Length: 183
Image (cartoon, rainbow, N blue to C red; front, side, top):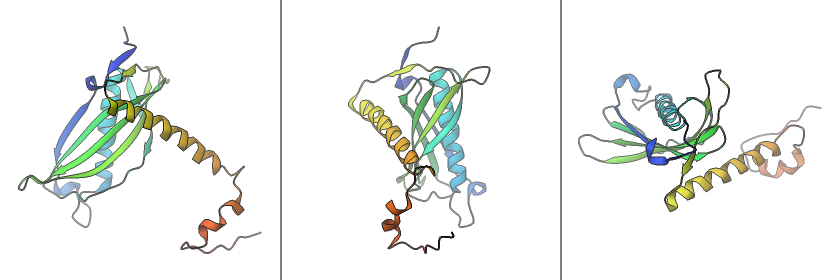
């Protein structure tokens, strides 16, 4: 029997991994692609644990690399369900690195992965809701709703069928661009 609602902490996950030279880019820092791969893995695990189904990544909202990650540091990723829709979940992620020698920790990244639960026929399937037990949990849930609403407005505003160039030319006046429209 599938539960209608689950506690958030029942599906929260934390993983820690040592950053190796094989994970580094040409400048000797950990490659952003490696970090994104780890983030996708923990988002998948968290969403799958919550929904009791295989899940796929539908979207990733805003990935900012705040601090570089060095070879030899411990990378800790934390994942939690912030929002549940009918078949989708927003998984909040936090990435921190720790210098093993000094104990210094750095916040490296926070992001939001929208994951969709799939049944054995690869069709989207309903997920349990979440039980909100704190002000922070309510804040994260509400923020996800607002982010979804803003995203749909942003997308529709720039749809090629409704986009009006004259509404946006003023934004380009001081930009590093040159407009040479072809007829």
